[in-house]
Length: 304
Image (cartoon, rainbow, N blue to C red; front, top):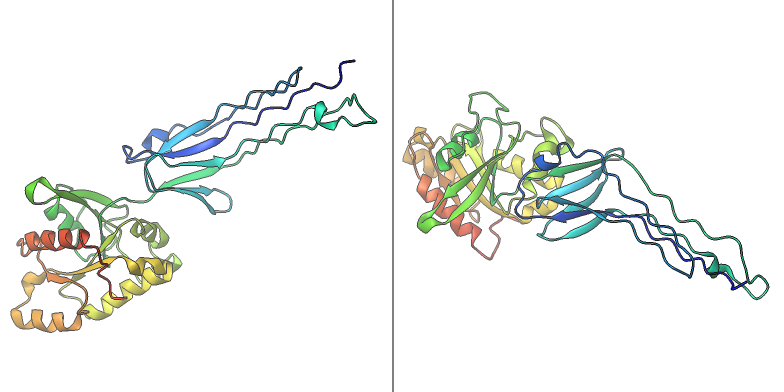
């Protein structure tokens, strides 16, 4: 007799992704495969609104991307510490019967149900976070350079695709400074279309502000090899061309000064270049100096 007083239902819990700069891998989620968010509480008498479901926060390292397993569509990307994104929103709570009272129906006996929750299979991927990414064809000497310039111990062999997952290493610089360098899987022509290691390789390059192109001294065409590498990056994502570029000619212990001069003339004049040898430690400290300088320059050092 007192009229309708049914309260609204609370919303269902959100599933939220949150960036945490102190996390570096997704290993803590390895056995966290089923995430069930609770329903919102139903409304009650006296127009009391039900409690919302308790949100679930999944902390992930910076550089994490979230995809739908079925469609492959990217749904979220975490780039900043403390950044929160509602990955799966909770269902909206229903409306109590008090919303439906009218002059002719002052005691409605119905309410609006809340929206149902959603479910699905999702994928979390982590892009490599490094200051410098090593880019080059298979067997260009990237793993060898990483083993010399950092304390990392990557697998090294004289055949293509030794590196099938990224290796990270910290480069100790002067006065206690350091920066992170990643040996990424070797690229081949067609990587942008998924050939070879394809997108599995290229997605990591997006997270490196500086790209170090490693071209071996015994290459059949140093300029051509650089252009192929740049073309693959452009086909995958034109934004990659706005990163800072550095070119290093590896295995240069087999070159004399005349050959070094000839090769240098082939390379783009507006991109820093250096001739190195990981085997005899030739220009390794100079390479560190160059990378540090480029990392701290305000202007981009690219050819485009």
